[in-house]
Length: 145
Image (cartoon, rainbow, N blue to C red; front, side):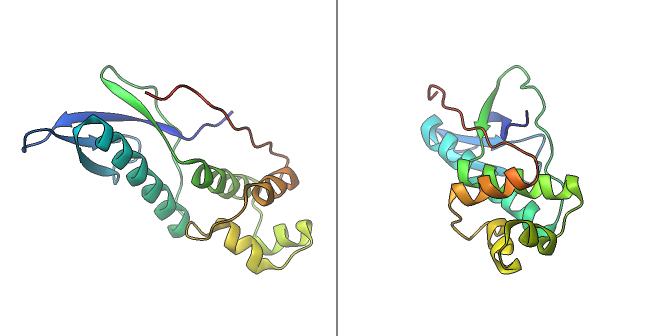
């Protein structure tokens, strides 16, 4: 099962109370926050933007490494994680937007919107598309840090 959470390193910034956050698996994702709570929020937002950029550019989305000592898991927000799962499933199947649209009985523009990081696609529709690709969307809940 593929999950969309990545290990992040939190290091003290130059200003008092600032934490700089980096992701070794997603090197373009670098951010900072004022204190731990803000840094975690900023990290999730930054990670979401980095994954969105990879989808928009047609680039690979890396699998997450195991966290090293001192790193913390940061999950990709659920709507973007679902879009990333669809994007990867389509790449793995070698399926185009037009082919998936045919399978779903919809217009290709709808598939394009499902993959658009800025379009608020409803989760049941992404689930339906993943089902058509032989994948199952699994949602989990865990205690907040």
